[in-house]
Length: 534
Image 1 (cartoon, rainbow, N blue to C red):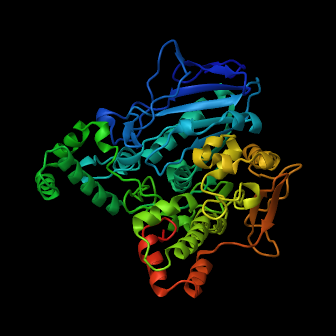
Image 2 (cartoon, helix red, strand yellow):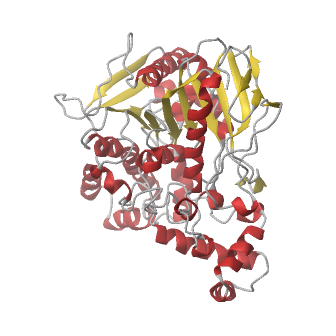
Image 3 (cartoon, rainbow, N blue to C red):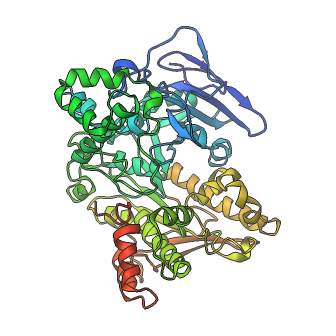
């Protein structure tokens, strides 16, 4: 393998690839590089396999297939989806730090195409890698009929194994793109960030990355038994949908009568499209679609409750959350859950406030506190992103119902304004707030650049960011990031959102009736990530 020489033509372990230079962004990019064999046929529900080598030069000019998923009622993508994309600044310097970034989407949707990486790579002077990984029933699926005795194959954690496989590809090949395999940061947003924390927890992740960036993703795992039960339900549904059974009882009877090999062959005979809608999208909810199974091999039994024992990837962490994590999910979830007739508008506002606090704590304070408490854990840096909560920086309509919503900080990292859905974009991105947004973008990218290069976000010209472990007068602290119309702000705060305090406030809230509190606890929050115990 030849080292990087500034060209878009690169030699990898598996063969040569040709990318292209983008003069407008000042970057070089390589798209759609296979990092594993297509997981099709007999490789469906198997651990990813090393890609095949090729002769000659392979064009890397277009994204590869995304994983099969449902989008607005249609099925898109395919099973042949294990591709990654690489961007770097257009200069000849080598030994650059590397950011491998996992997309969000609930582990049901999304792809590596979601990351607008050009400005991110250029402004942080880093190599940025995005990837597709298996999603939905292809990414997280367990059933006794599929077990072979191989602990990787039997884990059911195929999406997580894909992420680890991509990291091994980076270790073997990133020098060819001018990256330093000794300075790899694993990052992700939302479900991708939950997968990052799972990769930290997995014994298979140790040594593949040196630090981690976790944006709006808390600590979630699932009991393998729940995975088996849910897969059985999915299989009954598939038998009925295909017309092979008249009802779910008949499907259950057929499944109970078949040997494991027959069931496995039947599952692999189904088209990929059959699986696209078997897990209905249920935001921030584990019951409908269990994932990240504590199988005892890929992820330890006991999940994140095993942190105190060590044995996980103890790396520096940058953890981020937004002030209104639940806002975009709130209205649709409430409509589906059914608001009590009593004071629905007031309940909506209070439910949104408590849900934002709980989900924000789940994504920031809880992982920071739990990880920082482990002996030997390197520094943990946590922030809360507040931009959008102040009506003065938008047109004033969006402060309460939406505010600093889940994912808004990604716009500032990447410059991709499509993070804000079209109906809201003009109201958020006012002309008068442009200077403040630009200042906050520079600040956020400055912190990230320092972290990628050194494992510490602090640097010249940046406001001081203390680690969670720092011995400050107010105890563990979080960095609050915001901007007005002209300038950015970053300040350490000891005003932490602890779940216990939020729940105590809920119980004492005279503005809620006992019936409304019960509805929040027992209906609205049941099964939500931030309400269940790990």
